[in-house]
Length: 311
Image (cartoon, rainbow, N blue to C red; front, side, top):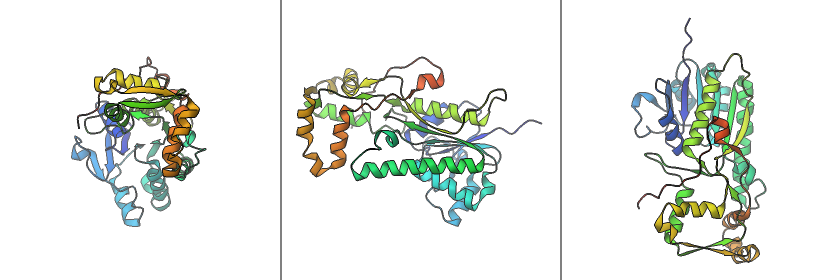
C-alpha cells in the first residue's frame, strides 16, 4: 500500500520567512497555509482561513475544519505566543483533529537568551512570553507524542517579493539619513541570518519530521538557537551595509571610547529604558550560535545586504 504523503501546514505565510519558505517548496510538495488572509501570490486552493488567537469553541472548530486530511507537519512562522496556545487549545478541545500530526517546526527568537537579564519591562515581558510559549509547545507536543523543533534565530534580514525585514533595512535607512553615527570603541559580535536561510532550515527540519529515515534515529524535540554563517562585529555589519550602497557610505562612523559613549547615552534611561539597553547591547556579543551552513551541510555564505527599497 502506498502511504499518503505528508502535507506541510504553514502558519504565518504572510511573513517574510513564511513567503521565503513557500518560494523554496520542492515541486509536488503537498502544502496548505492557514491564516487571516490569503498571502499574495498564493493560489486560493492552497489557503484556508484560520484565526490563531480565536480560541473560542467556534473558532477552534473552524480551525480544525481548515486542517488538511491525512498526515501533516506544521511549520509556524506566526508568533510563537500565538501558535503555542493554539495547539494547546486544540489538544484540549478537539484532540481528534491532531491525530495525524507528525511534527511541529516553530519559530521563536534568540532574544529568549540574549535578553534574559534585561532590566527594562518590555524586554523582560518578551523573554517571559517566548520562554513560556517554548515550554508550553514542548510539553504539548510531548503529550501528543510528536516531535517539535523550535528555531530561535538571531538578527533576521532579507527581502522577498512582498516582504522586507525590519532590522537591516532600518539600519540602511539610518545610514542614508545621518551624516555621522556615533559608535562605542568596542562593538560586539553579530550573526545575521538571511530569511531565506532560516526558511531553508525550517523546511529541512519539517522534511525530517515528515519522512524520517528508518535506519537513522530522529533527533529529539529541541530548542535550536541559530544564526547565519558570518560572524562580524556590529561596526563591520554597518560597514558591510555601506559597501553596497554609496548613499549609506556617506555616513561617517565615529568611534568614541566605550565609557564616554555609554555616558552620553545615559539620558536615554530616563526617556526610554528599552532604547538605552539596546544601545548598551552594541558592545555585547550576540553570536556563537549554530550556523546555517553546518545545519544544511553547504558551504558558508557571507552576509550581504541589499540596497534599501526606494521610499
